[in-house]
Length: 444
Image 1 (cartoon, one colour):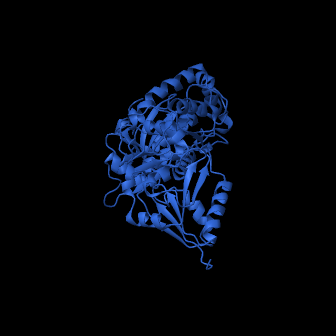
Image 2 (cartoon, rainbow, N blue to C red):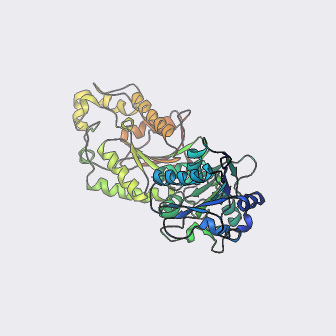
Image 3 (tube, one colour):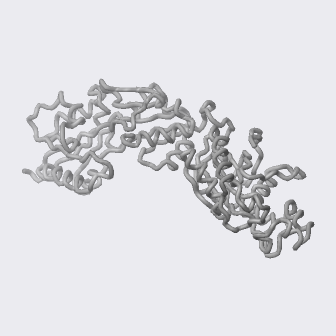
C-alpha cells in the first residue's frame, strides 16, 4: 500500500428506474473497488437492485442493515457502518455508497457523511430525488416563478402538519408509512382531500398515482409521498368559503353553554361554574353549526364552562384545544355570585345597566369593559403569534363576547347579543388588532 486513503463516493442512484442513473454515477460505480448500500435488517437491498445490472459480484460489498421499525435509527447502526467503510478506506480502496434518490435529501448518507468527512475525502454525486420523481409521476408542477415549496415529514404532529400545510403554496409530505391515516385526517379536516395526490413507488413497475381520497389504507409503503398543490391559494377547497389573506385569521367566536348560574340569573365572573345538561346539549349542537367551517384549532378561556364547551367542539372536529386565561369572563368583584336582582338592589340599577355598555364602568373591585376588551385582544394576539392556525374557534364568556364584538362593529352599533353558544364569524388581523364581522357571520 502507498499510504493513500480511499475516497468515499455518496452516489445518488435515483428513485428506482435504472435508466435515471446519471452518467457520472455509472462511471464511478464501475470504477469503485468496494460497493456499499443500505438494506433492511433481513432481505435484499432495493438500492442494490437498481444498479444490479452493473454489479457482477467480483468486488467486496457492504450491506448496511437498518432495522425496519418505528423510531429513530439507533446510532450504533451508523457507528458500525462508519467503521466498516473506514476499514476499506484506510486500505486505500475507493467506496461507492449507493444512495436511493439523492444523497442529501432525507438520506442515511447524511449520518455517515458527518462521521467520516474529517477523516476521508468524500465526493457527493447528486441523483434524481424522490421529490422530482413523484412530481413527474403525478404530472404536477412543484413551483413556478416566485412560488415556494415546503417539504414536510409525516412524522410531525397534527397541529404542526395542519399549520405548515396551510402556510405553503405547494407542499410535499414524505415518510408517510404508518402515518398515512394521520395525514389523511389532517388533509380531510383542511378540506384538501381532493387536491392531494398520492404517489407510491415512483418510476418503478409498481408505481401508483391516485387522489388521496381514493386511498383507504391505514399505512403506506416506505417509498410514498403526498403532493398538495397551492393549498393556501385554493379557491375550491370545500367547506368554509371565507377568503383568508396571508396575515389574516378567521375567528369563530362563541360563548359557552348554559350553567345553573345562567339559569338562575347569577353573576358568574371568575367563579368556575360547570355546564349543566342543557349546556352540554347546546355545545353538541354548536358542533354541527361549526362542522362545515373547517376549524383548525380552538382556543378557550380556562374556566370550566368555556373549556368544556370548547373540548366538546374540539373532540368532535378532531382539532387541538388550547387555553388562555386572558379569555376569561370579566372580573365582577363584589357582584360575583349575586343574582342580578340582588346586584341591582346593592349597586343600583343604573350601574348594572351601564356595566353592559360603557367602557369605564365596573362593579366595586371588578374590571371595566375596556380592560376586558384589551385582555381579550392580547390573548388573541398571543395565540396568533404562537400558532399558524388560520381558522380558529374562540370559546369565551358573555361579557368578553360583547366586548370583542364592540371592537369589531362600527361605532354606535347596537350591542351584540351574547346568549349561550351564540356564534359570530370575524376576520382578524393580529398585527393591527383589527376585527371585522364577516358577511357570513349570521349563523346564530
